Length: 368
Ligand code: HEM
Image (cartoon, rainbow, N blue to C red; front, side):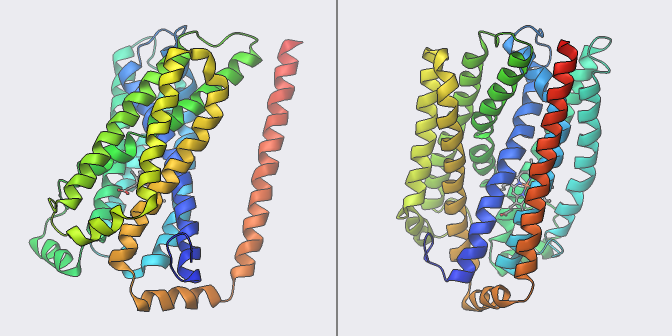
């Protein structure tokens, strides 16, 4: 079945996995780019574009982190259905990685609340920056761990056995760095659009203009991130096709290079770079380009996720697993699942509606 020529049941779970994974990535990107911005540009004046971005992310980061974590649950459920033994959270090779991210995310949460409360901005600005740097490193570590986890999980059982027998905690392969750079380099492009929308909305409410240098600043950050991501991805493909990393085969790589998703993914990156470059030249374009860029960024991530899964499916999925997926699809409970999905979606929409109404009412009251 399209798009990966798999049987219906497997493709059904895989599509659900890929879509929910992209939602997780988009929210996680906000947290990554936001903490990076506070760590590097935390001292900017509040009247500048950098200062406005800092104000906005300080306010939204605790929510964004909880949303990113919550959005991680759905792909986590589907991935366990899809790959079973190779991706059980409780499997012995992966469990300590999972356990290590819990305390780190809890500490990151407290750090983000300290930043939101602006406790040290005036009295000890260096401490505020230090907290921002610390939280950024926590988030980077979590991303790194997921990549390490992923790379170990797609290795053969012989590699698992050797790794387990050696007693090492971390699985190190030079493949991790270009992989992390490829994924996280895209964080700025999608997040920059959200920052632009958030700041425009806030300024509209205050009946003020957005800072003049905002579009250019967003364009520079996004272009730099996308170029890092593109270069890392090209290097990664080259390394895999030349068999530089242990555990990959040149056959697998050449199969992958024959698929259209990889080219669509690269086109998506180029398309975004081109649009951001035009915004850097003519900042006025941002208001309509933001919609193209939002779509392009989501589609590029979707294509990237397809490439990622194609590789894993070719390595892990056996006939037994295909039968198991079919069996799961026939299991009782899917109507109940669907009913709860609809109920929860409606509840979320209702909450958004009620909150927006309350915000609108309070803005009207302040105006009076
Ligand atoms: C802010 C903290 C987090 C960051 C920065 C983060 C980052 C990432 C990254 C970079 C990947 C891609 C790894 C790769 O392909 O190499 C990933 C995958 C994933 N993340 Fe997160 N993540 C975070 C929190 C979470 C949490 C708390 C959960 C679970 C509740 C979660 C669930 C997942 C799942 C299921 C995948 C797919 C793993 C795979 O396919 O191998 N993430 N995450």
